Length: 370
Image (tube, rainbow, N blue to C red; front, side, top):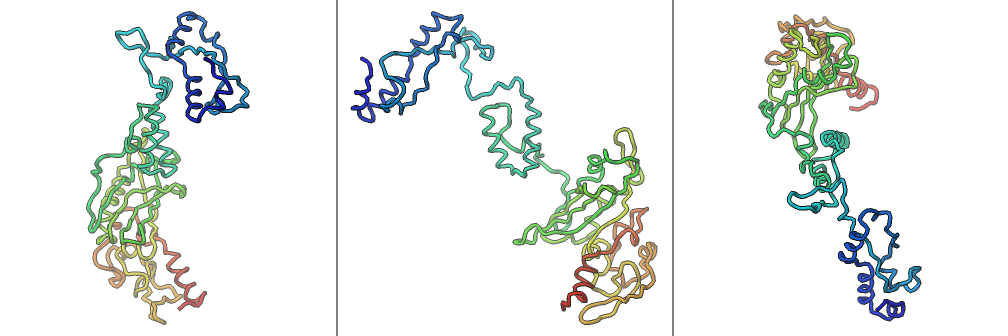
């Protein structure tokens, strides 16, 4: 008995949905009949079937007339296809999940690399990357489920060394230079190094002391050669610099091999602010007597601060620094930097413009602060 518009209009809501399911349901038996009758030209003989939504069955103004005609649709899943894999011992195709992509033409390793680069460039954290991988794995089973696998995160880090009262990791000067060496024309690498401390957050005393550098004159490409972490700065700057100075000496004397060339490394300059300079060189701070790193001017105490005369005193030299001619200029101990055989510790450590000018002379005289 056919379904008429009058019956649909008078039926309850539940009955209308039942009519819709009956209209749209197609039995496997009916589909198999068509497959068996027309196996060779089945795709071309399929009649277009209108996309009827369940709501249209309940709509009396629908453009489709509702009859009791049964529309037969072949079961295309039974047609032999080049993408269908057979199960051993059977003649039928194995059931392949529709949501699994055909990855025969995929370069999985390249995809992993691009996902890792994307997560780094876009600052995607590990949890977000892992959630994305879990979603993609439904369609590409060859992908891992953890972001650390994509990023090749090591399970153990053996290079971390204790530096009181924190920890230090040395990335290596040579390893950093090999990533930048394509822009070097000669075989002598001129390196500029900067060291300073920075707080990680305002809610704790946790801080970093990185050792940064760049190859002259490419000052835009800054790389990290070592980093210290702790709740306060290192107790001894020599312990902090030990690995760095040892490798710097080796690279200057012996160099390193890369692309059949031997490169040697020379540090031209160390950049510090006034506070870090005092800490690294083991000299008095910028507000103390005899604290000038260029001359022996002692300074005078005026208006609550130590001021230095415009007249330049006797210039300091590297040999005087090493032999500690001016004992008032030094603190206890000697800095590790004097072990660099080619390095002039006076001329190769510039003055700190920020502390001496911006928050020094200008702040006191130019803007009238106390």
